[in-house]
Each structure stands twice: as structure tokens, then as C-alpha cells.
Length: 179
Image (cartoon, rainbow, N blue to C red; front, side, top):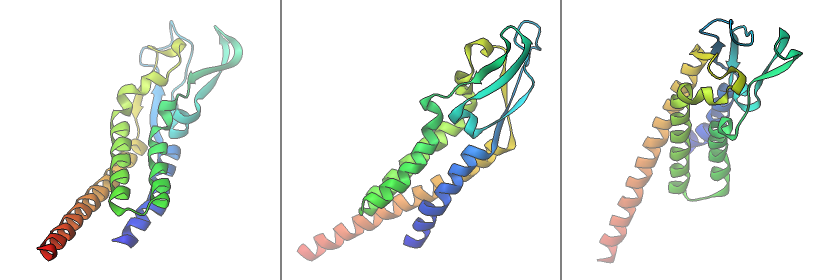
């Protein structure tokens, strides 16, 4: 169990972070056309766009020839990456296995919920000039991230339950020896 946990914490965690940052999650497009809005071609949105933002070059637009922010970064964009990094930090900082499994369980739960809800609140990243002019269409990378995080979540749920059972068994054994 310790070797599997080491693989999940030290390898799978960084693979998940790479997937969250570099896989294409959405296509950002204009569902209503461009008649009353700043011209915008469909763009692929990767995870790093939610971390750093997305700018486009405006030609002959309302803003002249300059770069315009389409997606702007908020602290909200860092949530799954911070959750996954916290798993590694807590694993290295503590020696209590139940605490490690509990933190890993909670961190993957938050990351999974965040990813499931990302299509709902992704529009909060859109700049005010584009707010109701653009929409997100889910791409294959989004589903891969969901599946990998869900598998990791299932593993940490199992590990947490197994750890709780082992601790309760040890306590029962101690009580039996004391009596």
C-alpha cells in the first residue's frame, strides 16, 4: 500500500497537474456571431489559460490595433493545481498516515468538484467586453482530466477507508489486551 501511495503522490499527482495545465479543455467561440461584439475567432482554451489568461490581437476593432484580454486569471483558476500540490507537501510534511490519506481524499474531492463545475463557472473568467458574446464548448482534454481525477479520488477514498479500518482494528486489539 505504501508503494502505491508513493506512486500516486509523487508521479500521478504531477501527471494530473500537467493534464490540467496542458490539455485542451474548451473551445471558446461566439454563438451569436460578431455583429454587435468585438470580432473573435474560436480559440482552444487550455488549462494554462485559466491560470494566466488569454489575449487576442484586435485589428480594426473598437479598441484599435492592440491586444485585448478575453480570459483573465483569478485565484479561482489555481484551485485544482493548489489542491494537488498540497497533497505532495502534506505527504512530505507529516508522518501520520490517516492524516495524509484524509488530506489526499479532500484535495482530490475539491479538484474533482472544481473540474465538474468548471463548465458552469468558466464564464466568470471572461472579460466584461466579451461576457455574453462568448461561450465554452467542452473538448476531449476536459473529460480526460475528469476521468484521471476521478480514478485518483476513488483510490484515495479506498485508502482512507482502509486506514480507518486498520486504526479501529488496532484500537480493538489494544482494548482486548487491556481487558
